[in-house]
Amino acid sequence: MALPWRMRTIIEPFRIKSVEPIHMTTREHREEALRKAHFNLFLLKAHDVLIDLLTDSGTGAMSSEQWAGVMRGDESYAGADSFFHFERCLQEITGFEHILPTHQGRASERILFELVGGPGKVVPNNTHFDTTLANVEHSGARAVNLPIEQASDPKNRHPFKGNMDVRALEALIDEVGVERIPLVMVTVTNNSGGGQPVSLENLRAVRAVCDRHGLPLFLDACRFAENAWFIKQREAGQQERPVRQIAREMFDLADGATISAKKDGLVNIGGVLLMRDEALFRRATSLLILTEGYVTYGGLAGRDLEAMAQGFREVLREDYLAYRIRSTEYLGERLLSMGVQIIEPPGGHAVYVDAQAFCPHIPAEQFPGQAVVCELYRAGGIRACEIGSVMFGRHSRPKMELVRLAIPRRVYTQSHIDYVLEVFEDLHKKRDDLRGLRIVEEPEALRHFTAKFEEIV
Ligand code: F0G
Image (tube, rainbow, N blue to C red; front, side, top):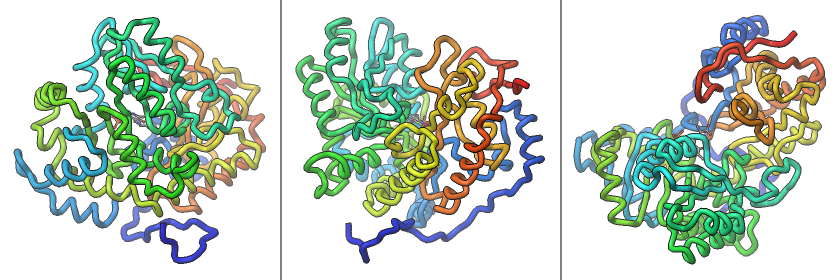
């Protein structure tokens, strides 16, 4: 990467052309908004949020070139220029021959697992993201997570904590039988495991297992560029390679991929389903047309395809990735230095705070993560996401009680993050005052989106 100067400060590699005001609110206003939202931050109006760290998905800022692409979008129903531009761009980056646009990641997952899943089937992954898991199970198949052992220890600083446990994969294949496994999936970076990367060495080892058993390997490649950047930084012998080449090697090891372009596609909506196999592609095309849209737009507008093509190019810029990963690391390291335990090392797209360590006086059944999330909002207008007993605890207790601070791409500057740190510092001093919550109303499934809570006094 050519730098104009030996920079000590990694600056945002862009200047701002269009701004969107955020809304300052008083503590009283937020207190009232939180009560009206029944202490569930998904039920807040976004207008009442100052810094929104709920997700990095579809919340990024597009570049001037992407907006120019929006104007160039060819809105022809079939055979639009924008499709061929998008297809060429993804073929160049990934090397996959068959490229289907979808409206977002879960649409790609739904099509894939409707084709290869089904009752009796078993799908291994380092860790399934919730929608992937739901789509595997919706098909009647069983989803199995095989992260390495270090992944569940917040303090372990393994450089590739997203890796799949290759021995556990072999054991699973032996146990259930190869004929019941339609494919092996690896999520890069591993979102549910703390935004942690997977090494090339691990991908090669998983590939070797797949080859021995004749199994296809698919990537859930939502954050492929962030993963490739971590490989360049951390894996022996990778430092001099262009990140684009590393990303290409990741894809070369796989037979296909699902991508939510709302992450490393740098767009607000869009997804991709990619594969090499001609027969699978034909079947996927039929399903795409059935529920998403014709094959050259897949449920999107031509302008969305232009924005995606440009986004996938921009995300591989090394000045962007250096800034992106450093900004997340900055938040994580500063939290650690004030004594807030996070999943170490900080992830690519998010920092995951260990809420159980933050408020040990609140037992898991009173939702320590939700207590932290509510107080972050009340104190500073910050919206974060609980990933613990509220999200996963309906049937069994999850291993960790976490609060995810996800960083939208190219949206907030360092001073916004310094403000988040300031709020955390205050909260950390007063953490003994945090109160647990109880659920007063909840739906059958995915309760975190709509459950209502009250504070325990
Ligand atoms: N796979 C991973 C690893 C994800 O993180 C997500 C979405 C998806 C698939 C599904 O993509 O939302 O476009 O349908 N993650 C978002 C998040 C929602 O907040 O982590 P989608």
